Image (cartoon, rainbow, N blue to C red; front, top):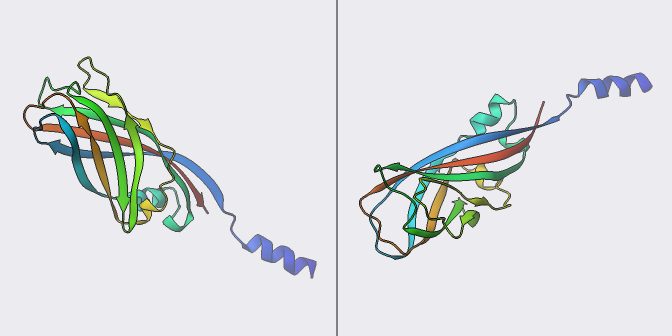
Amino acid sequence: MFMAAAWALTGCEKLNKVNFEHKIDVYFDVNPVNPGNYTYAEVVVTNDIEEVLNDYKGSLDKLQSLKIIGFEMTVEFPAGSTFDPYDNLDAYISAGNLGEGLIATIDPVPDGGLTTIAFYAEDLELVDYFQYDTFTLWVKGSNSGQTIGVTSFKVTMKVAVETQVL
């Protein structure tokens, strides 16, 4: 009896936890706006986390945690554009029938000609959002200065991932 139990236990593969970081880049344009409160961007993002998990021998059903640990926004174009017109910015995520979740914020947006700003990343568990093939990223906020011309931005989201692997 003992031999059969020992054999059964050795026949099972053990799951191990793996932690890693993953970056997601998102690009969007913002048309010129007068001072006010706006949704500056609403971007549908193709989710690549399943592919990344496969590289680590993981899968979506074994995904245990996924949280934003970094959120940066950079002015890509036109040259000379900065974040000076913006007062505060918030980033939200949604997917499927899940509601909007606040993932990052910066209030106030610092003046001084900055072309890259780092948001405060919220402690929001995102596993459910990343079960979908796509998710939507919103950037909302307010500006007291007028923006001139179409401005192109790049957002880099860094996420901490915890998954089980064989």
